Amino acid sequence: MKRTSPLRGLTVRLLTRKDDVDGLVAVERCSGRRGGFFEILARNCAQHLAGNSEWKAFAALHDGRLVGVGVLNLPCNANKVILGQVFVHPVHRHHGVNDALIDVRLKYATDLGMRRAETRIDGNNSRAVNVYERHGFSMVKRTGVRPGVDVYDGVKELTEPGKTKA
Image (tube, rainbow, N blue to C red; front, side):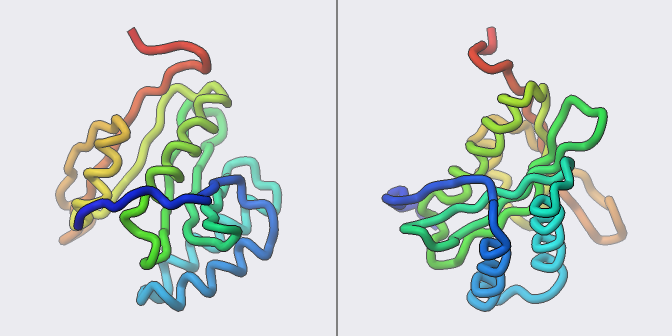
């Protein structure tokens, strides 16, 4: 599918209120997806709101309404971050929402001094693979992670704030 112009009025910020998480319910209704994915996403967002330092959740808002969510995992005693689940409302896909969620999470990680970002994507999700490659991730296909399940593991080396790669 062809990308269209970015949304005007799109902002991305740390998820700060339970209302943001409640907004996931409305997003889920429109998604056609049920169960596991949203349960995990909502649980990770709740961990963030509860002050769990390993989880950060970011809300993408268009004119003040929740249109996407992205999770960042900060493993203890590690110099890396994991870009976790992302969901963008179907009406707002292909308008740069996922790109904005990736950019903000990478900047957050860089500002914390993290050196590496990782992600894992379902082997059937070629659109997501392309998005992460566009953001500088090296994607490697892993087959048989579980019986019949292939995934792409993505890695990106981060620079320190204010420095550029040589």
